[in-house]
Image 1: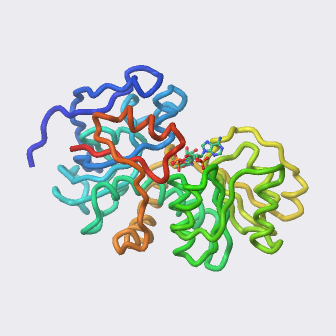
Image 2 (image 1 turned 90 degrees about the horizontal axis):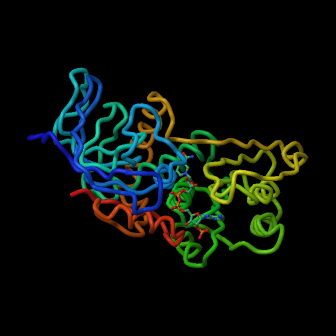
Amino acid sequence: MTIPAMMRAAVITAPGGPEVFAIEQRAVPVPGPAEVLVRVRASAINRADILQRMGRYPAPAGVPADIPGLEFAGEVMACGADTRDWKPGDRVCGLVGGGAHAEYLVTDAQAVARVPDGLSWEVAGASPETYITAYDAMVLQAGLTAGETVLVHAVGSGVGLAAVQLATALGCTVYGTARGAPKLDAARGAGMRAGCQPGNEGWITDAVMDWTSGRGVNVVVDLVGGDYTAGSLGAMAAKGRLMLIGALAGSKATVDLRTILGKRLTIRGTVLRSRALDERVAVTTAFALQVLPLLASGRLIPRIDASFPLEEIGAAHARVESNATIGKVALSIA
Ligand SMILES: NC(=O)c1ccc[n+]([C@@H]2O[C@H](COP(=O)([O-])OP(=O)(O)OC[C@H]3O[C@@H](n4cnc5c(N)ncnc54)[C@H](OP(=O)(O)O)[C@@H]3O)[C@@H](O)[C@H]2O)c1
């Protein structure tokens, strides 16, 4: 396989809006002994990319500071001397701390998963972040089991729909909230039993208690935070677990601590991007074993809201920031 010296990359030229992107030539990275070089075919936009572009979420150490992109699918082009599992031409996907919005990236050979035959580049490149986030939060951290109930906020989002599909596939009953009827419809299509839009004070607790005949939910997948948090606590069953994954509605909340005490609730925050390598390997392995087979069989079907070529990454960012998306905004890298 011929590896060029230079590649095209989407570069954040200055903190700002979607217009700050430029497609620039950068040197193709060289894999270290434990790494593989991947020719990226597909990726997707995540909210962290947008915060990074705005200058509000600097890239972690060890990844390009000005090339965003947290997930990828592509072909192995070269393998470091100490790697054993991969060979050039293998189709792989995974998570990185940044740098996926370019034609090539290097990543640890243990932190990639094999893309099943028949899975498109688009789906493989737009799945790792949402499904790993949802699986890790609900199953690996909150211990969700079959028969339990789950409440997902921003249920029409990329992570939200992945959570609905995974929890449904696990045998759980899923409820959700969103600010528009089309998102609730999409979530119902993905397996959600009931959902609602924001309403009067107490709307989250009231709706969930109505749906669950007063029992409350076992797990909350909270992508919204802010003033949703108090309602979520009121909507939880005894020993419920709230997984705080995002804070789209704000990072401050006023809650009644007696609710947490009385119901013996667990509130746990989680973040993927800054995790150490061993933790990234562990979640990627779980994704490969537990989620990719369901994607390959069609049991899980990620919803792609729109797809843009690398050259139109600014438009892809604007699409996500519109809050009108249902599911993922994919990026193709020809
Ligand atoms: N912790 C982690 O490791 C991790 C990993 C992935 C994502 N995340 C976070 O999870 C969140 C969702 O990510 P995503 O990729 O699924 O997002 P997404 O697909 O871009 O969807 C986000 C949706 O959230 C809703 N929303 C936005 N602002 C809101 C507000 N003020 N109040 C209520 N709803 C609001 C909007 O839908 P509605 O029309 O329904 O309001 C919007 O479409 C983001 O905050 C992201 O940073 C965290």
